[in-house]
Length: 410
Image 1 (tube, rainbow, N blue to C red):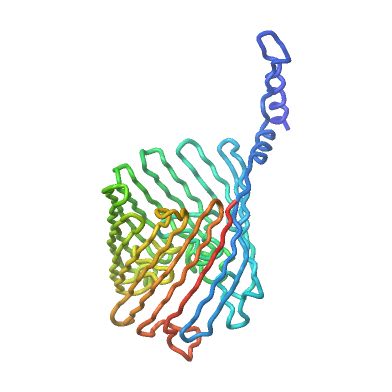
Image 2 (tube, rainbow, N blue to C red; image 1 turned 180 degrees about the vertical axis):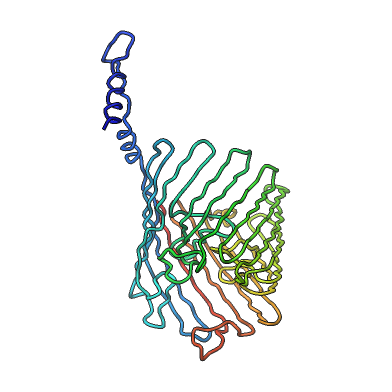
């Protein structure tokens, strides 16, 4: 109460201090309550509405399909003394007439029980001053081994404390601690926040991204994941522009995992890649070689050979390569339309003797606030050694997956 009286007294004095004592020229000092009220008035609502459909044709198991309507509704306050708050609801509602029954129901947009869901995907307090930003709570994170990977109805989100600093020229420093996550990549119960590692406390992360050298992008990261592994990651990408219609990009990456508590996540990987752009087409090739076992971390993974479905995650001593061609149709007058075709091959020797091929065909069209996406992934398990859900059948032989999403952003 005494503080409240003091604020009112100061505001009263401010209305009277004037060279001529003219009350008509007075300025009223804002009270803290008034500043907080303005922060809420200056807040903004954003989000997206998304319609999704998925159809998976399995070589052995029953085919599955599902349609859902959902999205994100988010409110973020304006700033008050550097602070602001954000809250986001994530929703996915099953469309029954376009969803399979029983074994034919695909749960990629649903709970493990095949139900609709709604949860608080973001809830954070943010503090920003000059070049420093600190965010605490449920939030979106994009780093090599913890990322949003928005491939179904919603992105992954994380419970974390993250700080970033941009005070150095063309350099971003980031660090923090991550404890839990939710989303499609998080495993069972995608709408529930769960520990990053069962039995572990969380992960410490620190990293730097630098673009101070012209045409060169560099980044390096360290993760200490409780109960699982210590991980190092670094990559570099260098672009060369020959003309307005021709360019080249060269890239390389390295990651190393040192296991904790006999987790089995212990190994390293290097990767190289190159792509050339000629007019409307970009043609690229990449290669990853793994010694031991590596992981995507908590998301889609940063590897150069990642496909729509397959990655090098969890496969011992695997070699993988990827060939892709992309078309930017704006060059022929179809602004916003991109087409792509990608081939990937994943292979190792004993003990798994894996040989998996994947072909992806995708199209995306973006106009104003609307994005339409379609992808068709064909996974051929040539050695038929991928475990099936039905234990009487030791392999699934692969599958084809069609995915379509229509998103309106506001």
